[in-house]
Image (cartoon, rainbow over all chains, first blue to last red; front, side, top):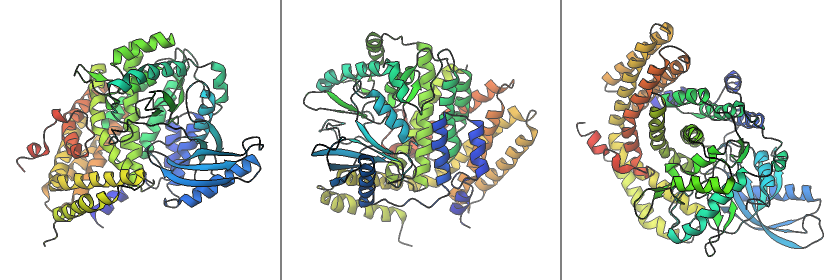
Length: 409
Length: 174
């Protein structure tokens, strides 16, 4: 046996036994729908290996799904793969149909969003569909049409929404991966930054009645930290299930997060991935036309989005060298101050400190856990991307250490 | 043997950069994106392969040192696990002393150490030595992070590359 074989054989997570899966579920309780999705992910690992899915197969599945939902025949043309995003597969196509009521004749550009066998973010299409419904008319976002939540028509759970015209990065700056550290330049920044803050404020103060649409989300109780602990366990579970190797700092971090979980003071709809690169804008007007990637949304603490948007990973140095522009928008303090004004909610420094640690824990779970695992197991359509992104792990671990050292004295 | 890894990677990279890349001008964007990522990955390998053995030996040496520190804290409270840790340490030291050991063997023993160290940190919850153990793990891992970040530097995702030592400097003596 070669040393490489010995290394592969020592990995108990690649083909997990049922009692291994059950123990993690019992040790780290999460939201109900998260448990469903993560358990399914682990069971898939013992199934057939991932095979590249042909475009034609997805188009056929999408057509069947739409026809079943509408009750009449439709046509799909001009289907092609869409680039961008590190976790899901996207196909753009023209739907030739008669509208939702069946009484029109329309050609509409649509997007099919589907899962690979595993991904950097294992998430629920049902939750994503529900959150897009909840923000409709409040936050610019893709309009969701149909969902195949249990993969009846398509190889994996999928959804279809309308195509949003816009760009994720200025046309002269096409090198960045998924918008990390995206620099919009001074002119565009002036237009985008106020919208970036205002939309975050709107999201966090959304009419609570809209949250009723989100049946597959656990609703936190104000004054309790139970929901926060479940969100910490979401990452812990990801780490337990996906990691290639243990990192002692992650264990120290978990204990700290559980011991210091702050009670929720206001239930917000949290985007979960609110940063530069995750929205489309009109390059001429500078208007944000669509917020993307809602798969990590939760009901929880607003400080989670605030600290995420201001992480160094997504920042770049201002032109005058005065400091880092959070998400390529504005200095951190300016952003918090503008947010307080727009939302009427406070920005609490203790909660910021907590979620600064939490978000780094999330990122590390995704990068050094799920991302590394999915590429190692050859489970996605873009393993070369998920593998590449693992290089973000050690710089983020370094940032996390700096925070923890201040907190554990 | 004339087929060195360096030559294999070098000729492949040059062909992809000089011949294939220009032909992809009209390709779909996801194809170009993946092509560029393949280039970056192979270039990373080209730059790091000469240091691979040294790197993995250094990482294992670091983990052995952390393990000994952890064992000193938990020996009385978790004697069985401490003994297990000591046994893995002995394997690791033996591996470092044997010239024929493969890189992946360093990884196997390193990962065993990591798992058990993680387990002992988890079990220290609420124990009198918990805080000191957490601090040890944190400081020790932090000290080694510049080496791990320097290792990944060719991939270009570190936002503060200027604060890192070069890989040549780290392994200047090897």
